[in-house]
Length: 121
Image (cartoon, rainbow, N blue to C red):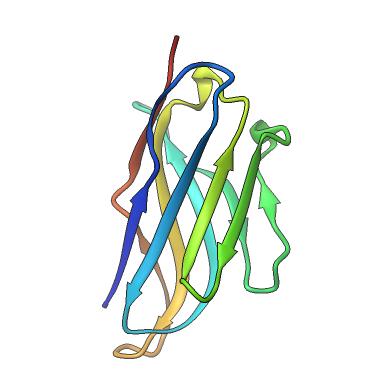
């Protein structure tokens, strides 16, 4: 029904920057909240940032003003701009979308497959 394609991950040195993108496609009726989560090996998945349809964003405390989440509703795409990356940011980053499908018109959440972000010198 709904597919989320993530891109932008990779290897970056400490202090560097990356921009993650997540494009939603399929039979989408309406998208509500879009967000990013991350999961490091041996740890639980945690919220990084979320942006509802109203535009008000929420960030995890560990972001410390370094990350910015944004969305392009026309492209059904959410972005995560990451600056001043630290080794502790190393994780698999997952896109999450809260939406309704045309084929299944109920509110549900969908996950991307994840993109690896590695911060190392």
